[in-house]
Amino acid sequence: MSQTRSSSGRAPEPTRIGGLRPSQMIHTFGPGAVVDLPSMSVVVGGIDGWNIHDTALIAEARLLDSVRSLPGCARVSELRSPPWMEESPNPYQQWAWVGVPVFPFPRWMRCTGCSRLAPVDYRLFSLEVNRYRPDRSYWYHDMCQGRRPHVVPTRFMVACANGHLDDFPWVEYVHQGGSCPNGPPVLELREAGQANRAADVRVICKSCGAQRMAHEAFGDQAWRNLPRCRGRHPHLHQFEDGCQESPRALLLGASNSWFSISRSALTIPTDASRTDEIDQKVEERWDDLLDIEERVVLDYVFNRLRAGRGEEQRLWLLDYDPDDIWETIERRRIRIPGTEDNENEAEETDLRGPEWRAFANPEPLQTDDFKVRHLPVPEGFENTLDTPIAVDRLREVIALCGFTRIDGPDDAGVATRIAPLWTESPTWLPAAETRGEGLLIRLSEPQVQAWETSFERDPRYQQIVEAHRGWRTRRGLEPQLAEPRARFLLLHSLAHMLIHQVALDCGYSTASLRERLYSRTPDEGDPMAGVLLYTASPDSEGTLGGLVALAEPDRLASTLRDALNRAGLCSTDPMCADHLADEAQDTLHHAACHACMFVPETSCEHGNRYLDRATVVPTLSTPDLAYFI
Image (cartoon, rainbow, N blue to C red):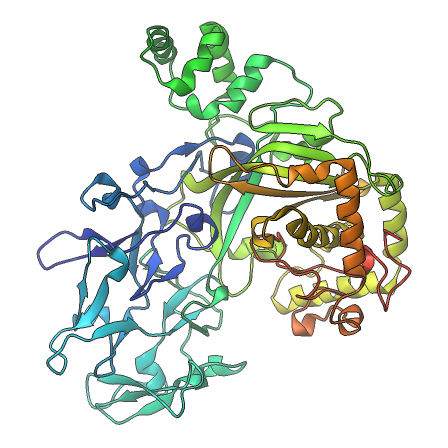
């Protein structure tokens, strides 16, 4: 990460102040997110300020077609990795100049010596940079009581559900919405009482004597004590007019200050019905061919390879005829939006359907990024399961498309509130690719249809649907959109049970395991009923096979039985078993809690919502609705 620092009469120069992993820039600290460093805090700048020459192209055509359907992404033609280079002990090598721009935020800071509260723009504070240890860089108040005490960011900021973020309005807040009557305000921030809470601080105006406790800015009616949202996007250095959302005070580091909106796709063979080896190889190795845009370039590459001077990763080209390779490249070339009609747009934006067909194909095609095996159904589960699938090799690409604040992205209607990553309409998006292994559990479609017909008539299902509608209505969203179907509740609950059990059996932590749900009823299209549990790593070799080993019939049977037995009784029962969804309390789950079903945010696609143990196994309060009896 590099902070932009300007000096009088000079152009801004980057200053390295820390580091992030590329995957963190997609999941946790993307553009618009506040990064709380040891001695300062910063907001990550928009992607239009990233140096595209420090990024690498990532090929995944299906995902690219899908992200174009999101608001503001119609012109996206590329997916690229965030700028990153491996560090070395020498801070004067090239890696030290590769990074993403960040800016001080909150801009209001407090001197630890005199408690003076002022923004960076007042130039009261200076930045000390440690080039050899960027994490030790800090702001200081020069000549404060004859010393140079550290300056720390204030722990408060304001945000709204439209994705805006702003500094806490200290001047307006302490003066009850007005300004200081005695001229320029001089503010101090001091602890009050025992300071048991972060908000137990008092802001004081030394110019006029006004003072106010910070905790008055928090609570259900606290928006009355705050000015209207200014529509600020600090990562883009711009303001949007006309925001009608009420701002909310947040603590620095609050988990609801930034939620990534991303889309992911697994790399699958181009078409389960095609067997053309060249087509599959070009699809699989598309990263090696992205820069070959003319036939003369391809001929040059072949000539260098034959002479032994070409790149090693392209040696596979020599196994094929150049004419066939060029013809396949032209067919495969990623299309730029607006240059060509997309006849299969609806199909290409369906990410899960093609993956399900590739997995379920009786004779699945195999590539370096997609290797699967169909295994026998475990003994004792012949009536409830379909053929399980061991996924020996998979590749996942995740693209960051935007972000939200306050409310998480698991809500289907949140697309109307996506905050932008850019100032103008982007032509590329940041993405990350990982490789790993997995296990696909498929349920018997006839059995699932019979079960969901019965479950959807039960008041228990209707109650979670009503809670879903009320929860969305309170947020001004279409209440009947994205209603959870019965099979989705079943699959989601089963996935969480298996994540906990697999973590015990194969040694992975629950945070390193992820779910990918394939849920679709017959009236929505080709039916799907399956759960993919997988783990992936940015390393090109992927993971070590501990998860896929559980797919063997004997081990899978044992894992399933243990998971179902553990889920039948929770340590917090009967409270957990009796719990029902309640939109007033923001709980969209029935029998589920941290002791039995909840998993880390990195593992769940839906924020631990829409869970119910009773759909999978009998519970103390609901013994007769379970799929597995």
